[in-house]
Image (cartoon, rainbow, N blue to C red):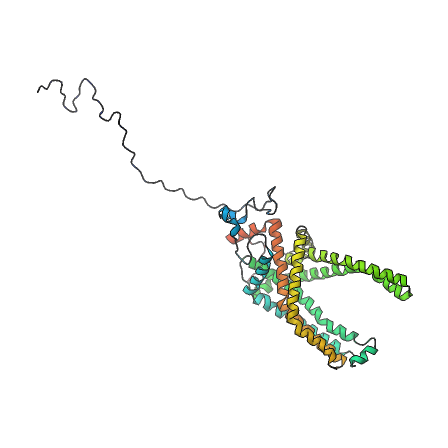
Length: 403
C-alpha cells in the first residue's frame, strides 16, 4: 500500500481535517451544585396604626386582618385568633367579653375575688357597726305601736341604709382593681393582690373624684328633670289645688319617661371613666372626656351589652343573697321591738354587701374594662399595639406596677 497522501496524526498538512463531531448535538451540561437559598429577609415590624381610607371597621389595620399580617394564609384568617392573654386581639363578641372576664377571675383569684372580699369587709364592717348603732337609738316599740306614731322607724330606716354607703365606697376601689387586672390579663400577665394594690392605689383619689362626679351628674339630671313636677305636687298639696296636683302628676309621669333615657345616656357615655383613670393614668376631667369620645360610636352596642350583663348578674346576685333578704323581711313579723329589727337589718345589709362585692362586682367591673379595650380596638387599632407588645417590639399600652 502506498503511503502517498498519508499524513501522520498530528503532522501538519496542506488541508484542514474534518471535524468528526460537526452537525452533532453537544454533550448535555454537567449539573453543578444547587445554588444556596438566599437568606430570608427579616420580618418587618408592624406599621403604626394609621386608619387607611375606605377600610371601615378595621381602622389602623393597614388594609389586612391582624391574622393575615401575622403570616397566616388568607384562606385561614377567619379561623385563627392571636390570643396572648384572655381575649383574642380583634373586635370582641359577647362571648369573648364574658369568657375573658371569667378567665381573668380564674387566673387571678387573689387579685379579684380575694381583694373584693377584703375591700368589702374593710368598708362594710365599720359602716355596718355605725348603722347598727344608729338603729339602736330607734324607739323600742312594737310594729303595731309604730303604725300609730308617724315618726317611728325613721331613725331605724336611716341606720339600716348606712351599710350601703360602705358598699358604694368599696365599689370605687373594686372597679379600679379590676381595671388593672383586666389590663394586665389582656397582655397575658398574671398579677398578685399586692401588685394590683400597688398599681391601683396611686389613682385612688382620681377614682373617688370620678365616681363622685358621676353620681352628682346623675343626681343633677334627676333634679332638673323631676324638679318642676315635684314642685307642682308640693305646691298643690299645700294649697289644696286639685288642678295643680293633677298637672304635677301628669308632668311627673312625663318627666319619668324623659329621665330614663337621660340616665341611660349618662350611664353609657361615662362607662369608661374608671379604665381611663387606671390604665391611661388620666385625671378626672380628661377621663370624662376620654370616655365620652370612646363611646361616641357604638353607643347602642355598649348600652345593650352593659344592660344585658347587669340584668344577668343582678339576677345571679339576687339568687345568692335571697336567703338574707328573706330573713331581713321576716324580722318584721317576729314581734321583736322596732329598734332590734333595724339593728339586725343593718347587719344583714352589711353581710349582703360583702357577698355581692366579692361575687358580682368583679364581673360587672371586668365587663366594663373589656368593653373599653374592645372599643379602643375598634376605633384606634389597639390590637396592632397589643400584637407588637406580645412580640416585644413595642412598649405596653399601659404600665405595670413597680415591684
